[in-house]
Image (tube, rainbow, N blue to C red; front, side, top):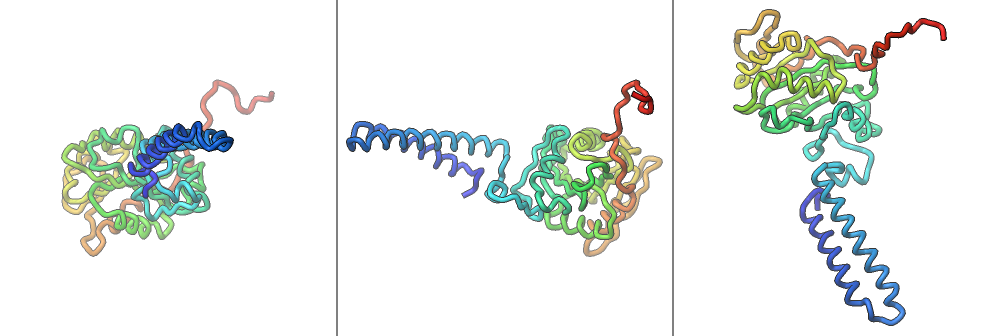
Length: 288
């Protein structure tokens, strides 16, 4: 029975009601034993009622999306279909670190529910894969590759893992587009929210697009050429000046080929601007 499932919530609620009814029935029965039964019944009813509310809140907020997340500290990031990460500005790194536990050095894969992702016209929340070591280097900011198209979770993780096996690294965002997805959202809203949630750079990202999303990739690069100077597509397209297009190698694994090229076009991790001291109008070398 799922920890976020409605059956468990209903079971706890009915259990609370049953405990309350049973307490009323034995209130004046069984002699001196009734005092113990009264206290036990009231306590059990309250615990089950609180459990019902707790399960309902957890179902809504996804604090513990599975029993594994609740009972263990080891999280298998290779299977994340039931792990949703609702982000608040600047808090996602902390959440990932807490859930990764001893696996902080591994690549982290998770559905990314940013504050406004539903307004981007996507079919589902984007899937984000951070490179190995991302959580172990909090002083670094990473480049990003945004992938437009529809692949299975296994294909996404396999292609990303193989593309970063040589040591090159970037945060990879998989976005399944729809007819409602616009270039404006991909060029501004998605990058803006990602910059608030993760340690990423602000320029020299890369785009990867399947055939159906070629026009959308063109429009996105046109609106943000400084952010997306590199675009990997699988057919010729007209791209803005300053944007480099590369034909995806046709083969058994075109996604891997495109990711390898795109990640290679991005710069290595840089010192995070978030750690740069704010200007205070003071002289840092002055003697106190």
